[in-house]
Image (cartoon, rainbow, N blue to C red; front, side, top):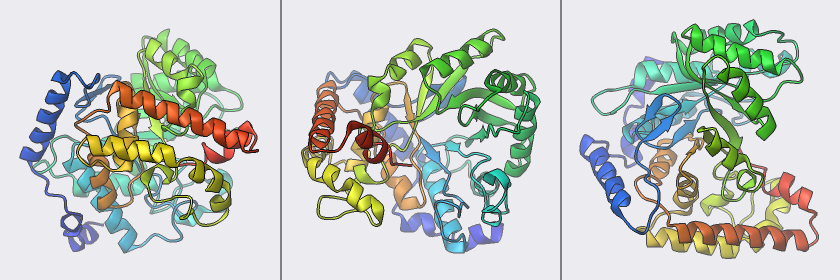
Length: 394
């Protein structure tokens, strides 16, 4: 692995990133200007996630790193070099939070029971090696923070399975403690036992903070209640959330998370590339998604025009950067876009250090509401709009 890192050491320079302490200071100075500005309401520099202090309100999703079940047909030197560049560029831009999971399996295990037995190139193994071989304190201002997840498979019975699973993850990651640990989705049973297991992980010093993922408001409140009895905060709920798929704003989730002093960790913030400007009514995604997204993309042009106008108003920001900043500007939301290259990580960093105004946020919400109504009225049932159009992202 180390030899591979050396071989592709110039990949970051290809991406156009020029990481310096001066650059980080300049962005933070920009954020201080945002703090003083009357046109923005929320500051973007610095972010509190439970007891963790993040220098910037963004993380990186690592599902694709080493994964051949969903993301990659194969995993070789070129893929790993690109992922390593993403890690370095993110770290050099103070994006230091990296999200993985035991369920992000490696290539040897496509047919394994439950799909979670890990291979040599699993996301956890790849990330752990990057932390050891790529972290450079001279060009990276903060240490990397690692988050992983417990897969609540039906045969995992009792709270001890949560502890045991984390110990297995720690071995793959090559660390003694993770910064954040969560239950990946609600189990079919044993959920209160799983929440107790999260608390055990904190008390044993195996995890600094804990959270849940893909939990509805009631399930999240139950997890919060169980842990609160032990004096352990539930720090976050990781959910699908983007300016397209904004159910958290409409179903009370975002309000509940604020009430409980938690963070919404947002996966799929770019909606499978739909919010990047890559696709349009005439440039459709490949495969079945093309037909499904066609009516949405045709109706979405007013929204995309609004996003482009917002980007222009803030110094030629891209649609990707506007989409990420929309989430950051909510205040208690941590987007974790997936990065497969240094170029992607560099673009993500451009979402930091500035804020959409309240008026811009409201205009975007209005455009999304209009889009939803337009697509639904055009003969697509609302349930299909939700499940196929607005939720088909990772």
